[in-house]
Image (cartoon, rainbow, N blue to C red; front, side, top):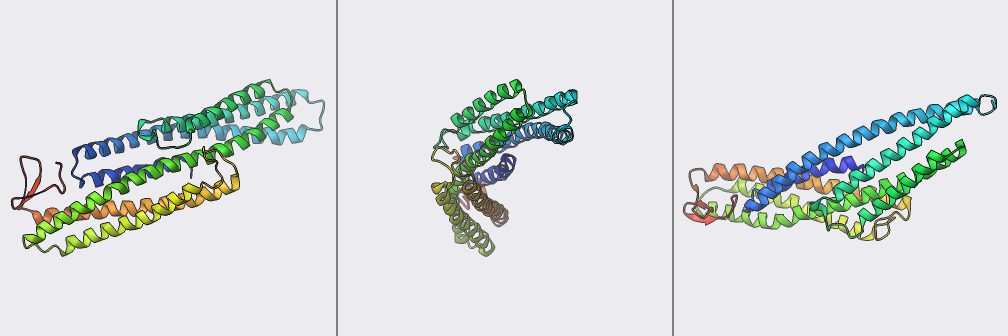
Length: 319
């Protein structure tokens, strides 16, 4: 999964967390979730613009390099055409330097993302140090490319860069996968409290003689989706415990194993988020039905508690 794709699926998860907080009985939870949702939207737009800009520069540079490579093949045997060779050499050099800049931009975006207060303490590995080490490696490569005097040196740098980029992409996906796991766990941890409050709301309406069949159906479907999400998340957590293809600090040890691991993790996380989004939608339906059934019977007490015919409940409001 590309970093931009992870930002994209984080946004609906935070929105779902906000929906969940509306039923959790905590003003702080509602405020935090709302702030996280708005912050995530803003961060995604900023990161997307950065990636779009660097991607265009990279694609332009790639096209330039491919044209240069093609021309090099045509003039390779023409030893008298020194001017063309020098020109093509500079184009190839420019391509590598732009490619390095693009890679450094990707690392900086990732570093900023991981360095956010909301993500601190999530990673057992020192991801920031790994990113800084890659950045230093790229800076050294820039110097080597700038001083290169032959096309063979440029090609060697290109090959080295390709290897570094492959590892960076895998490690980025691994780190963001861990961040996503943390967000999913936060969501799931709130569902038990919400389920209890949903049951409390149903019980109080039922005690008043209200027909709660549809409400109970919505509640049951919510719990079912949450259970499905929990089961899938348990598989994901177990998978990350093995971190096949990665060392304990998050660096790549085997690229093939790492790609296979991330592919499976991506599939599981997407499936979990799908279930959680469905649970959030089901909770909205529960809220609509609850308000319809409780119409005229609901008021907010001086303590900020929701009362149904004089009986206090903290369901669907803040304490």
